[in-house]
Image (cartoon, rainbow, N blue to C red; front, side):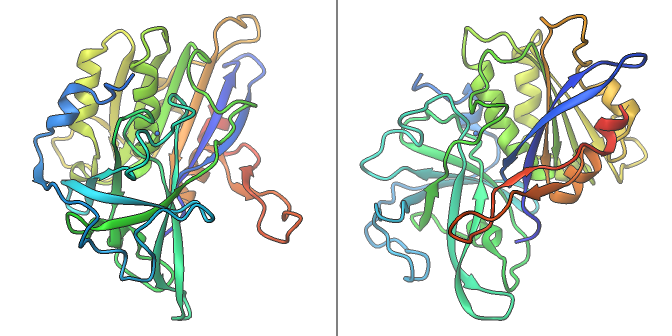
Amino acid sequence: GGSTTVLQSAARVGWRGQQRRYLRCLWAATATTSTLFPYMAHAKQEFCSTSATSSGASDNNGLLGSRTNKSSGLMPFTLLQKWQKSPDSWWLRFALPEDQNFLAEKAPNIPTCISVHYNGTTELGDHSVLKKSYSPISHPSTEGTMDLLVKSYAPRPGGGVGAYLCDMGLGEILQAELKSKRIMHESPGVLHRWDHLGLVAGGSGVAPLFQILQILLQDPTDTTRIQLLSINRIEDDILMREELDQIAKDYPDRFSVQYSLTDPPDDWKGLTGRGSVEMVRDALPSPSTNNNNNKRTMILVCGRDDFVYTWSGPVIRAPPKADGTKGPKIQGPLLGILQDS
């Protein structure tokens, strides 16, 4: 439900007295076998666990089956554990299908995204299978499981996928398909591409960025320096804060994080506001320059459509496909805070 979460990237070139330009691409959002940071596996949150199997489990109201459908790409994921991360958000851990060891079998270091299928209703009230994309927060090569960070929006006609996921009981089955790789500047990969990476997360937009963070930091051959800016309304809305703060302690030479609130309390000591040129210069890496081609800088922005528009301009669609279906979401013109910076 709600606006689609999207992720955009901007390769930043130039600064004050120089020509500035941003090369951007679009990701729809809405990612070794020892793949979780140690403290993630034992998060100090409300915790439930079960050894549930697919037998006797819910199959999404019975309208979607509980077996892998190879013709449609749908796969069953059984809910094993769940942690409440905020008043309206949950960390959900699913078992992969029995015949699959990893979510991304052929691309263990490429960010992943799934399309969740849910039996709901259209805005006109007609029964329909609704779809929504989620980027896992677990590393693509996590063996046997997949983790999602999901915000629950109130059920409504044409939406309600987030509420459905957060309300799932242990042992229930989610139907989803793995989406195709997304291309950023002619490649879907993130390893060994940039010297400096800035991540701008609006609310639950931190999820796909968290997966990218894991891919980069868990590869011993990658040296990317990463700065993350998480923007939320109130302090309770900050997702993955404990995990991000711990990563910053574990990787002080490679990762830092700052938080900004749009409705801060009087004693808040962090940044304030939804974004500004000053915030860019304080919390994100400085851009590459035309005279220093060896310094490669990328900025990724992820959040709801209006958040992305504020930071980097609109998301648009390519022309319709040959079969008449909608074209893919693509980069619109660069506007917003990044352009002004």
